[in-house]
Length: 602
Image (cartoon, rainbow, N blue to C red; front, side, top):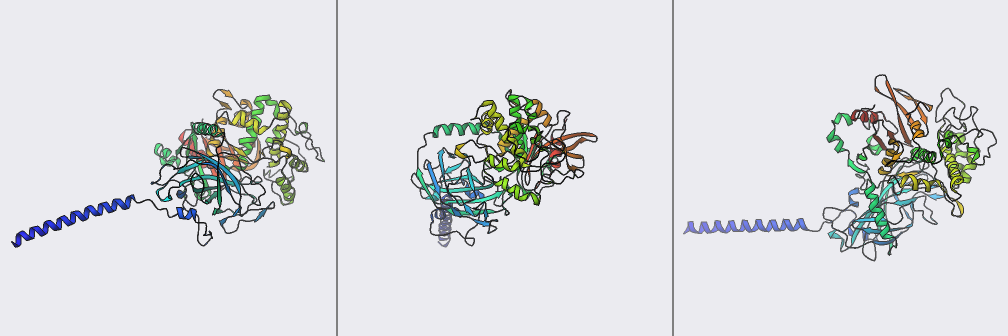
């Protein structure tokens, strides 16, 4: 009897264990299926209007919080309308953005403006893809939004969620402060806009490299855009036209690690936003690093490439016009297209080609030709007041007035290269005048480049700083700096140059003058006063030429484009292109060595 009761007790205990285990599994599964609760950018965080962000109760978060999470589903609502955001003081690290005022505008203020978007499937698409300028704003900044995403999450109480990338910049400089913004929405309303600015390239006037964050009161005006279907088709074509972007790890899987190890040698990883190789219409890119994780929209990330604009826009515009009107345009004289008001005769023999070479013989530097430093006089203290007056001038007429106030050197044009943004801008105005002479007063070089070069090679929504002209006159791109480029833009123009100016059988750029620029002819540029272990560096037609030896005694030259701070684009003889976007300078030999090892130069 005791034994029988013992067996009953054991069976009862086993049953309790089984039931408990089942209950535990159900509970565990239930916990696993419980709606995901965000700890950052939560529903409460996005909708709480009472709590003001301060440096003590908030900070930037990991960039992943601006993307869908594993629990996300399709958006519950269609978005179509205009977001109005108010001008708001930014929280930043460091606490103050210095100087606090530039050109009578406040650098700590996020601009107040209107941003129109519509959704297509899971994409949030800006109606205006250009740089948006706030009207009557006290903020120093302008904003350009790029396509983002829409989705929904279980913890958002029936709302949908969206995020989009953007840059802050100004029309004076070419800095690019990359950020992300997020909000939740229904058919009729949206939450506050939360944002963080997580990386930037080198500024000139702004003394502080900063990250920033905050929340902005926002309102939503639903609207059906009459051109929405057209914009959807255009965006679909834009995606189709893009080069494939593959992770750098695919190269490390394909090639021995030692061949790729030195690619970014000489540059600190924290000074690099992104770098990679363009091979056969494919971009192999390293992660886009920021202090808060990888940038969540790497293909939309825009970079102010500073003086790489001299090549990407200045040289390509001259080459396009040479293809249209003949290579002789390089020998045209500036004085025949612009009214020269200089009190000297230094401009009498200066040609379009001299301006592209920055060898006009005009400038306020020293007359020391023994050292022959390309940067002599560029930012000389005695030249600062005049330089800044030119720099801040808004119209082409005002800028040209200051160009012609510069003295001339005793040696004349095409003798020594001296780095001068003003030479490239002067070329831009002269090229625009030539185009108007050929095609009428309404012709404009930027419009010509968009229609005849950028669009045909598959570039969409490339933007640039421009002059601000009165009465709605067409502006002129600065051309010496000012382009805001994605990886795809860089890849497309580089590939056009690598393909001798041809695209799908059409000769878009002058083949002969491009060959000269790339040192594929006997013509060579002027020495810069700089060198590496292989020899002396030179400059020609906006390209820096770095000497290199493929093997002992076999010398070649690598054409490079440089942008202030650390933008580098290098065109290799094996048709590969290397690029690095960052703040770490122009060390390129590791990149050149890597490309030569992957496919030896000939």
